[in-house]
Amino acid sequence: MAEKMTGIYAALMTGLDDAGGFDEARQRGLTGYVLKQGMDGLYVGGSSGESGLLTVDELAEQQEIVADCARDSGAKLIAHVGMPNLRDSVRLAQRAADLCYQALSALPPHSYPFSDAEIEGYYRDLAVATDLPLIVYEVPVRTGRPIALEALERILDLPNVAGIKFTSTDLFKFSMLRRRRPDSSYFFGFDEIYLTGGVLGADGGIGTTYNILGKLYVALDKALRAGDLARAQELQDASQIFVEALLETGVLPGMKAAFRVLGIECGPTRAPMALRMPEGKAEAHMRAVLDRPEIKPWLV
Image 1 (spheres, rainbow, N blue to C red):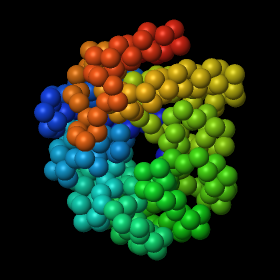
Image 2 (cartoon, one colour; image 1 turned 180 degrees about the vertical axis):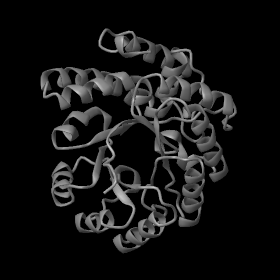
Image 3 (tube, helix red, strand yellow; image 1 turned 90 degrees about the horizontal axis):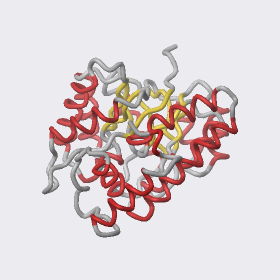
């Protein structure tokens, strides 16, 4: 049996130029900053990377740049390849395999109200497109509907499917699935309640705010594994302060404003995604939260 996948992975963001085009230099600067935080790896090309607004060619280029940046870091790389159609997903999956990524992941198809059987068929075909282990994805807030528990069980039984990224507040469903398929890997996707997922048996986390607070989440996970729930709760509380600030700016635009405060220029988010406040105000807003004593010690 292959070794079970575990750990803390940043859902890597994307570097764009001032006009919103993909920018290699900014991607390299951003990736280098995130890699310094000591996480287990990077989750490349997901929703946090604005994948729904990027072209397949841009995502393929990003895969190559990140692989080059991470080559001597020891970080593991998971390529998110969940496009609206299977053909593009397979193309990105095979590109990631060529670049020696360690695993794949994919949103379920979400352009139309696909049935559970159609989603299962998508994952079946994608899983055999390469030899890489596949992390499937339950994220109703993104797809507009949950996948039935029984369908998720069947999907986890497919060849090459190694586990699931679970980004849902249906924690009873999470627990049932983990008990019924204990050999699968379980990554929890809600940063602000990672502790809850960990207590219920998550093997690790994949998150947006890990791009800046990766060190904090590594420490939170370590405290959780050591049984130090008081320390884990303290760190989760700190992370929630940061997430609350992002809810006022918009999560991804606010993250990019925070990166600018830290001296890492990764450009704007791609239109139509936009800040919920003027840019100067957003940077001042994020500077204030980054300077808080609960947050500042965790910055690199």
